[in-house]
Image: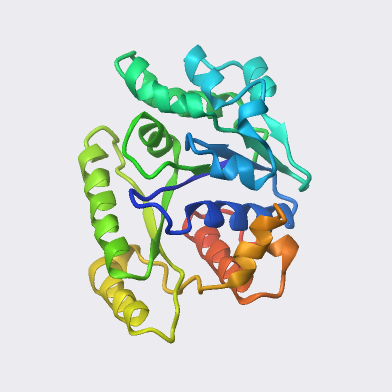
Length: 261
């Protein structure tokens, strides 16, 4: 089982789209995928057409228990209508954890302990993060093998990337092997000077950690979200899906897993 966390301390850069796009492609390759929505706003949960306010259980239950069990995982986990994709939904209650539970011992390792309970049941886990550094992001970073950092190709988003990398360095001391991270340029528009200059800046500053391609602007992503479908199910031939296929192959090779993609 491999675990990818999709994180950036700036919103609107394509985090949830990246999670869903990769999940859809993996599903179509008969992989067993677990998606974890750690954002109290629940964008990933909503994407799969679940109303988090009406769900009887959510990821919050696992954090309340602090010692996750297989039984509790089964109560929280939701099936989706896409083969092989399982979802742990968010709840607005996750926003209270910072205030009520951050001082509890072991709160930064809840997700890691939970995944240990189900490590033989999934091929890939993808964690969607809120755009703030807090107990949820700390959990997501502690649990993963690689961090994917989507960065919109524009100036302010690159400033957000600087904050994210500073966070990695801050947490590095608490993790023996540090963090493997890959910067993913998103929303690239080759017609604009801003996109081209921003991509050049990323190449100069993050060359060793930069995916050497881009996710282009593609209106099919928005249309797919309206249908609550991963892009590769909605419009498998669109340029955005081709880009995510390339990203998936790249990540698969990076992490030394089977390359049958």
